[in-house]
Length: 347
Ligand code: FES
Ligand SMILES: [Fe+2]
Image (tube, rainbow, N blue to C red; front, side):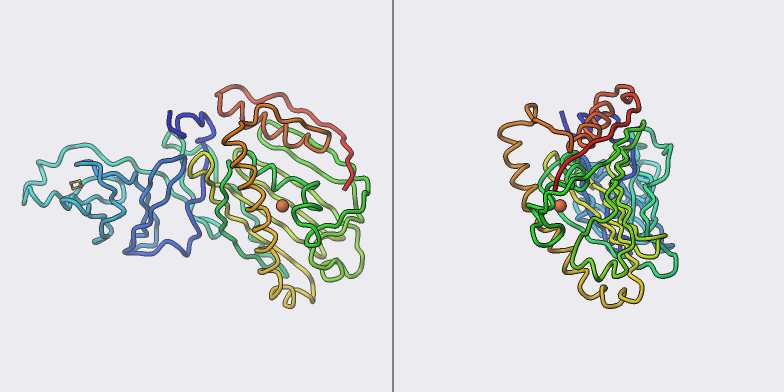
C-alpha cells in the first residue's frame, strides 16, 4: 500500500510544499508529499498551482517540462496543461483541440500564507480548514525567519522530538539546556486535535545565553503545543510578552522515513534583538542539526527493529497523547477522549 493510502485521515490537512520564495514563474518545482509526486509553478498573476506530476498521455513527469504561458508542456510529446490540470493542446493533433481526451490531471488546492506554499492533500477537494497559522509575528519588536530541514524519520517521532524536554540536556548538551537534575512539573492536556503542555518552571533557562534573552530575569512561561496532524509550537515568553522566543515547525512527509520540516523562528529580545539576529541563525542551525543526527540514528533503528515495544515514563505523556491522536486519524477512528494530567520529571 502506498503511503498516501496507509495514512488514512492524516492526509486531510494542509502540507507545506516549500517556502514562498522557492516558487518562481516559468520554473516547474517538483515536490513529493505522502510519496505522491507533485509539480508546482507560479503563474504570471502570482498564484501558485499544483498538479499530480504525471502526464495523462504516458505518465511522464511534467516537472521535467517547460512552462509556457502559465501552462506546463510535457517533455515527451508536448501535451500542454493549464493550472487546473486541463489539457489545452496536443501538438500531434494539430488544430484539433476537439480530439483532446477529456481527463484532467489531478490538481491540488493551494494557499500561500505566512511565507509558505501549502497544498491540501485531502481526498475531498474542498478543504474544511485553513493552514496552520504560523506565527510570523507582524507585531512591533518581533522578527522571524524560516529554516528548511530534511529529516530521515517519520512525522510522529519528529513532532515528539520537537516537544521533548529531556533530550535537550543530552543531544544539545552545552547548547540549549544543561543538566542540573531540577524537577519540572507540567500539565499535559489532550484535546480532540491538539496536545498542550504547559510547564510550571518559571526559572528555567534555555539557550545561547539567558542573559541575552532575559537580562531582567523575568519569569518565563514555557508551553509546548502540538496541533494535528503535523505542527508543533514551542513558546518561551518572558514577563508580559516583553520578550519571547517561539519555535514553530510544520512537517511535510515525503516518504515513511523522509520528512521536510519548515521551522519558523520568531523572537523579540528588546534592545538585544539586532545583536541576537547575527548569532541566532547559526545557533538554531546548530541545534537543529543535532536533532537531525539523533533522529536519523533513531529512524534507522526503527526501520530495522520497529517501534511497537517502546517503554515510556511520565515525561513521555505528551508523546503518548500525540501517538494516540495520529494513530486514530491513521485508522479512521474517532479521536480519543480529551484528557489532562499533571506530570513531573527531572532535567
Ligand atoms: S507522455 Fe506526456 S506527452 Fe506523451
Ligand atoms: Fe532537540
